[in-house]
Image (cartoon, rainbow, N blue to C red; front, side, top):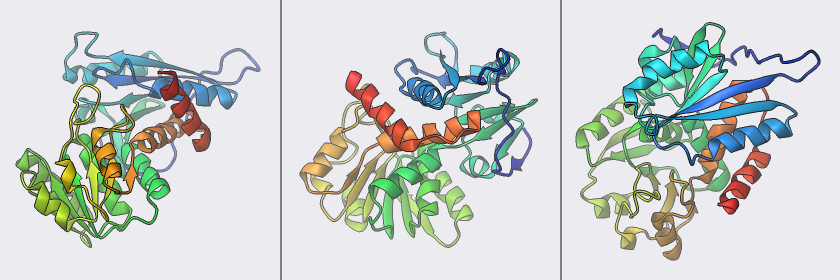
Length: 306
């Protein structure tokens, strides 16, 4: 893998199709259990609304009986088969790094990739998780205080959200994870990138002290997802003026958000992040400017259909 590259827009090669036809695109999603993802229909609907054809395929390593490390073979195979790019999700966002030819500065800083664009002969890694969350936070909680925030979860999603929070103006960030070593590594890495902010480790075993200190709580673990039900902190600790944001979007209203709302806390669900990271990836794949409001409408209609 080469070093970081700039964040300038890539040159896109779309399938030309018959003479006079609008170009079309082929993209995919690599990860475990990705069959129910709403990302493919969001991309396809937005392309159709833009007068383009985009085919989006899921490549579910669980269904295929493949290990997470197989992403190292799937990415070059997709490039050879003419894909314009791939989205990469759990558990492959870090494992994909060695097979890429370059990373944008943000992806290199975060150390995880969720979007790969095939630009000529190169596979370039991007991270739109952070930009998607930053856009969602600005839209959904524009006036939420940013002085002291707790981030629960130090995995790939947590790394992207830590970056987003500090770009969004958070002054003090406590990273908490059941794996204290992983939390420490993320805090140290993020602290080096943002020397003007105070980034430290939060004690995941003492959420009462953490949330008494914090103005905001951002959740970036699988707890609360359909297949991982539950709540990551005791609900009685969720009290105003604390605001609560969840990266989970299936279900949209997690137990964490329901408890926070019942206790009077401002909340932000994971839907905005899901849509805006998809919109950013769509732009990278196609070179088109997506209509974010329209993509939000796609998202909510797809949820309603379920």
